[in-house]
Length: 221
Image (cartoon, rainbow, N blue to C red; front, side):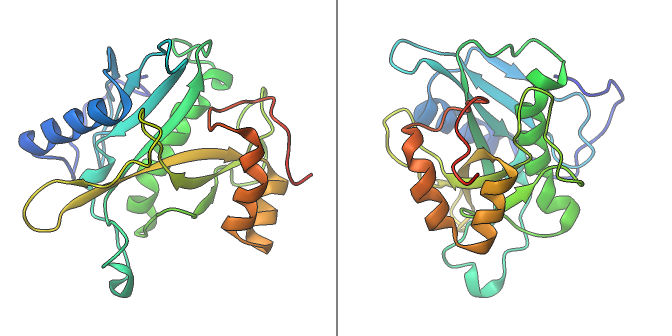
């Protein structure tokens, strides 16, 4: 998963104790990981990807960023009492997804995780549930094997089937939220912008699960 081999020192990082807490919480909420995609270039945050392999009970890959929450986002003061200013991000991939390939049609979900993880830093902004992001400047698809060009942030569901609550990192209100990234077609993004997150979710609920499916129906075409 290395995008480059140059050395870089991250500006924002968890303490060793915090990293242990985040790692333990990811295992508790999503399952035991047997692989971590270590980032080789970290100019701001050190964003690794924790990979939880498919099991009989959960026949899909779970990918979780580990490091994004070291950065404190610029959440407006009037929202700070109920919006976390730190976050990690999650996606579910089919069990036959090729995670070893560096071809863009295989790599784009990982690129999406890393792009979203760094967006609040580069834009000096913030992200939370219901936010959407167009991932390509010109709105073209993310790769040749998909029509998706954007994503929406949703509450993340853990292995228990319940929503994953924010992780408390310390005694001073430092909490990390976990958001699931769900890719959208251009028409679905346009629908959300014209209507609402809730109305889009009503349409997407027909999928029954949130595993990325590059062949799924476009619910706003």
